[in-house]
Image (tube, rainbow, N blue to C red; front, side, top):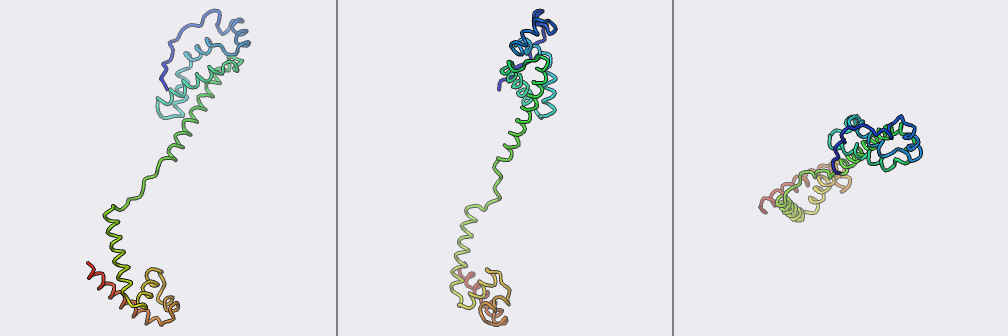
Length: 193
C-alpha cells in the first residue's frame, strides 16, 4: 500500500467552519463532507497513528492501518450523518483494521511449514537398506525354531515366557534357541561383510 504523508495543517474555510449553521446543514444533508474529513485527517492523524502503535508493533503497519481507516471512512462518509462522530468512526476503524492485521499475522504463522526432522542422507538410507537385506538373508539361513524364537522375542517384543507359551516349548528351550540363533546371526553377518 502506498504511503500517504499527512496533509499540512490549514485553517477551515469560513463557509465550512464547524460552528457555522451552513456547514451543519450540508453535513446533515450529505453526511460528513470531504472538507471536514480532510480537516479531521490533519488534526488527528498523529493520535490515530499512536492508537495503531499501541495495537501493532511496526510503524509501516500502523501507517497503513491509519491511511486505510481514512480511506474507508471517506468512502462511507455519506453514512456518517453526524460530523461529531467522524473521529469515533475513524478510531473504531483503526482498531478493527489493527485486529485484522494481527489475525492475518497469526494465521500466517500457523500456516508456515514446520521444519522437517533431521533426515538421513541418501547414502545412510542405502546403507540401512543393505544392512536390512543382509539381516533378512541371515535370518532365512537360521533353523526354523531359532528364527521363530528370535522373531517373537526381539521383533514382536515378547517375554521368554510368552514365546514359550506361543511355541509350546519350555522357557529353557527359548533361551537355548535364542542364544544359538544370535550366535548364528552374528557369524552370518560378519561373513557377509
